Length: 185
Image (tube, rainbow, N blue to C red; front, side, top):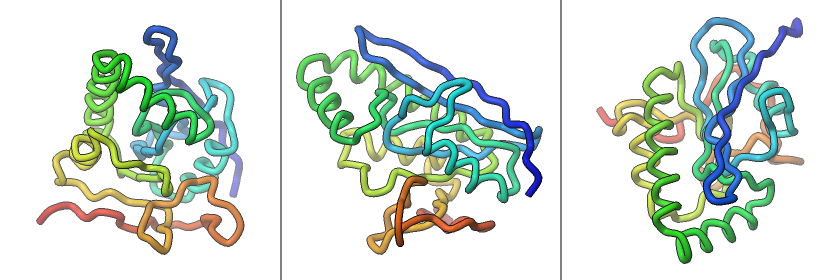
């Protein structure tokens, strides 16, 4: 495959010291983008890729899209899932108004981006906990279940694999996604 120039952008925020990333974009041409939802943002930025973003580039380029926009279940920047869980627990317990405001903004953005996405891909692995806003997240991603949610691959338990899955769980290069949740008829 010929290497194509990849452009990037990102939307960051801060709420009372919490470092947040609401979206990260990578694109290589003008075709519509995929919307990719994972669990939590890492430290990738406008020009900096991390291993997750490099793998997303590898997995996305064969697809009929011109790039992707990454959103997350939680916008709190934490490379380790344990740090995300700790933050969520503390935020809900000590600053529920701030947490709820962040979630409202995040879900509104996810819905807006989903409305213009060529395809919606979930890739949170087995890290997606039972969230108080899980049903609202799925509604926002699927536009009230009118659009299917895809994955690069599924685990044996039916969870959408994370791009950093390693070893025998590594996602092979593919040209077709799998349906994780179909749209309602």
